[in-house]
Image (cartoon, rainbow, N blue to C red; front, side, top):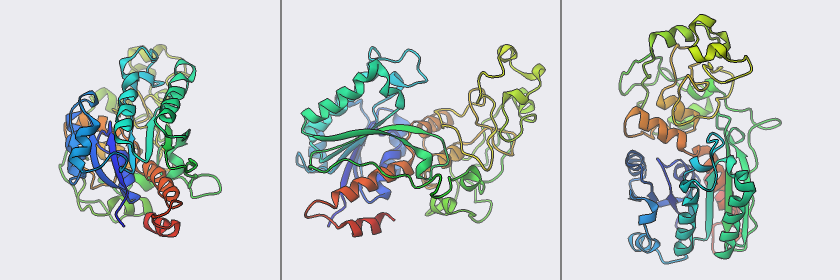
Length: 383
């Protein structure tokens, strides 16, 4: 019995695809207009077709022809339309932003491909945009397309083993008559302990501020299950070079203990604008991570001026590989492009472990239908 299939729209580097692949899905195609993300996606999913054009220039008919699928044969269409228009970090968010309408292109593709399942992920800010009208529009549109079983839920990445506090809004829909369910948490109180930063990046080589040694061997043997899992199939470390910060920032970092922030920097060393800040303001700025803690949300740049992106014990900011580890990308997942472009790809991605949990829940639901693998077989595959 062949593996269930997915197509990933607005794929970026392919975090969703990576997680679905880990849960036993086969990636047929991806689409994104960011060229460096396309190079990463293609290198990491060599058997998949990649479409580098804006989604408005892509048709379902073209995808069906290229993949050899008939309408209705695709198992799952997944993706995350660009979210800047509705992000809580964008204070001018709203339906007037043209990026807020790109989900309609996703729905156009869903109509043309007629997949059995649809998964859409986005930022939680979507819930409050226009008093929830965007969420209602997505669900009503899916129902009009025949996806009567549709629901949404906010999922916390750290509850699925990701060493990072991250919230994502996830829609799941199907036209198979199967009730929609979301994956139960595996980590947290009464469950597995959260994966901490030491377990996530403690085996990576030390670097000085601005140091770039190219491909590196591992510093030591893995000392956590998380490291063992992410190192599988990799013998060298990609994307592990430290951004070069100016001397003043290096001096500032020396005053910040693990778990500390800008409040620990002597006032004479603070940027001019921050000297006037209230102690209650900018809580994450110049934050240093704690080995035993979780990372804050990995954004599209790990800038110490804006968040807690200082290494727990080294006076430097995080590398792309460390950010990727905190997002749960496997080490064999190498990112293309400049360092700036690599950070964008990592920060925009859905953590693969979160995607894997969603995909596993869908595979279990698929097992309830005739002509599919049993639930026991599926659970064994994705364990």
